[in-house]
Image (cartoon, rainbow, N blue to C red; front, side, top):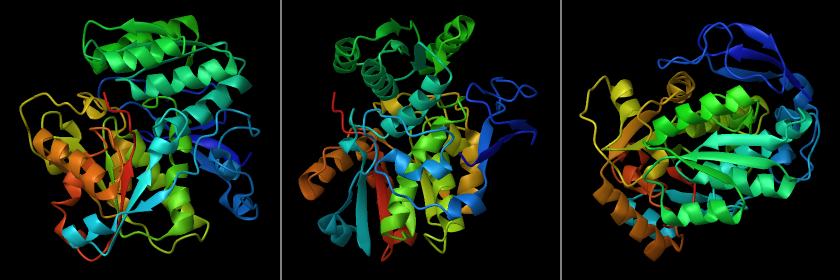
Length: 366
C-alpha cells in the first residue's frame, strides 16, 4: 500500500493512515464545510508498479486498501462513442463512460468496492449509508456478497422500484420522514453511535478513491478536452478530478481535461456557490443529485479550479429530452440524473470540435 497520510482539505492537518478514519478531528462535520480528509500517496513508488489486475483493483497502488479483495467486480466499464450525437452538437468526438455496466448498474459500485475492502480490513460486521437509492442499492448488493449486515437510510420520496432493489438484497431499510439531507443526518446519528462502518461518501475519505478509478480508466484510453458529470454532494466530480491529476502524475496524460459539473435548476446549491448567485429552492426529478446541503464543496471547487472548469444548472425538461436522445441516438439507457450531462453539453460552446466524455453514472430507470 502506497497511501502515506490523510490531510484535511479544510485546515491542512495531517493524520496517519487509518482504515477507520472519518472527518478531521479538528474541523468536525458541521453544516458548513466539514473537515474532509484526502488520501496522499507515494507517487514515486506507485509509478514503478505496473497495473496488472482488472477492475477497480487494477489501480491498487493508488488505493488505500492493504490488499486486493475478492468482491463483486466493479470497473472496466466501456467508453462508448456516440458519433450521431457528436455530429448533431458539433463535437469533435463524444464518448459516454457507461457506468451502467457495473454490478448494480451505477458508478457508486467503484466507491463501494473500496469501502467494503476497508470495512473487511477493519473487522466490521455492519455497514450503513444514506442515499436517494443508488449508493444504498450498491452497498446492499456488495454487503450481501460479503455477508455483512447492511443498514440504509433513504428519503421519503424514494421510488418503489429502488425500495424493491434494496429489499431483494436483504437490506435493513429506514425511510426518513424528510428528504435526502434528513436521511443523511439520521444515518450519521445512528450509524456512528452503533459503530457501523460508513459508506457515506461525503464523509468517508476512502470512497472517492474508488470513484477516481473511473478517470484513470478514461486516461488509459483517451486524453479528453472536457469531462462532464452530475453533481450532488460533489464527491464524484471531485474524485474524477483527483483521478486525472494522478493520471498526469503517472504520465498517462499530459494535460487535465476541463471539468464541468451539472446540477438541476431546482436544486443547485453548488452552482450558486460557484457562480456567486442565489436561487430559490425548488424541486427536481433528478433524485441522485437533489442534495441541498452538499458536503464536498472544497474538494469539488479545487478540482474545478485546477482544470479551469465550471458548474452548470439545467432544467428538468432539458434533462428529460436528453434522456430520450441518449437512448434514441446513442443506444444508452441512462437514468434521469445521468442525462443531465448531455443537457449541459448542449450549452457548452467551448466544447465544439473537442473530445468530450459524459459520465453516465447510472442506468436504473424508475
